[in-house]
Structure formats: C-alpha cells, structure tokens
Image 1: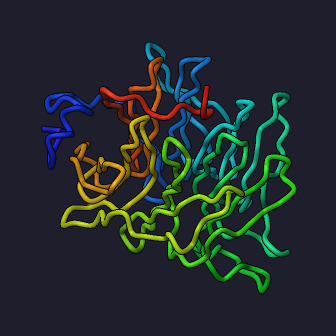
Image 2: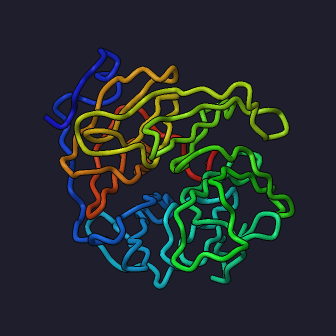
Length: 301
C-alpha cells in the first residue's frame, strides 16, 4: 500500500488505497536529482528542475514531458513571486534569480557581506512579497577565501534592497515553508534529520528564542528531510525515511506516502484545485491525489 497510516487523521488527508501515478523517470542520474516541482496554474502544467542535466522540465497531462528551458545554472528549488515571476535557486551561479516577463534575469541574491553565497537550495515567497531561501554549505568545486563558512537562511525584501541573515546554525538547511497564516517558518536540516520551526516576528525576521525541533524524520529506511510544503489546514509534507512524511502542525507524524524510490527530493501542490501532490525523487516525478488543497503558488492566488 502506498499510504502508511500512523494516526486516524491521515484518512482525512488521503484515501488509504489511493494510487501514486508515475509521470516520468530517468532524470538526474547519479549526479543530481529531479527537484523543485512547481505548478503553473495558468498553463495547467508542472515545471521541475533536472539538476544534473542542467535543464528545466515541463509536464502536462496528455502531453507528457518536454524540455522547458536550458541551461539553468543547474537550478534546484523553484517558486513564483506575487507577480507570478519564476524564482530559482541556482547551484552553479550560487545565486537566487528571477525571470522577468521578457525572459531577462534579475539577480535576487548572490552574496552576503561581500562574499558569494554557498549554493542556494530552496525558496519560498511570503504574502508581503519577501523572499526566503536556504543556502547550505556544500563546498563548491573551486572554493575561495571569500566564501561563507556557514549555512544560512535568508530573507530578501520585495525591492531586493535588503538581504538579512535570519539564522546561520544549520548544517544543511534544505526545504522551507510557511504555516498558512505565516506565523511560523519551517526549515528542515537534511544532515540532522529534522524540521525546525520558528515564530515569525512582525518585521519578517525570526524570533530565535522560539526555535524548536518540530519533528525528527529519521528511520531505518532511506530518505532524509528534503523539500517541504504545507496544506491549507497546516499539515506539513516533507521527504523523510521511507517516503513523504505527513505531519500535523504540532509535528505529529500522521502517515507516510510510500513511493518506492530511495529518497524524496521535494514536493509541490498543483492541479486545478491544488489537491494534487507532485513528488520528485532522484530520478523520477510522480503525483498523488489528496483531499486537502495545498497553499497556492503564488501565495494568495
């Protein structure tokens, strides 16, 4: 069965017998996975990153897979801002970028205090237009004396004028998501195997005294915390041991969506009603229908 229930509430989220649809495979290879699933509602299609092959892929029902854009500087996490523009966390260029309507590229963030970012991983936009992203330390191929020596979580103002380091004590900060009311920011740490939660202050920074481990997602089966999204009821979906873990807002493990691949790399909601959960793994993309809608992208749309 693809659904493992750990609590009765899981049945309110997905039918126990719901099947997983495989949409495509053969991505990434051993060097880098499929990542960053992003639903483009106006067009009715899914975008995702094929990192190692340096391209952005498109999937649409009835059409299948096609290459949407290449090269991408081996982009990873994707999202959209309030104006619907595409944001991407780029590995090779070590920056977060925004694609404008004329296809030109605007740099959202590329350095902190004069030193290049490490390797931006995932990105989310708040309803006030601020951009939050994770930047794990993963030793670039050609490190220089100017490189940062820590892994950070950052906030960028809508005018791109102010970059703020919110917290810098993660080992490998990865997936990032807000609670539905945006009062809590969740960030997972792949190396430590858990999700941390922070209360968000009125000015958009984090109340560091509220820092807590929400849940530990380690286990005997393959998979670490990777990627993360939240539904409109506040349930959290995150890669973990054995598949996609579904947690309630308190961090209680409600169940696991078992897709059979060794590791989940990210998840994203989509479909006309935002009730389709798209799942990327190292080599494949799949989907499953849920009963609760995810938070739309762009938020509030």
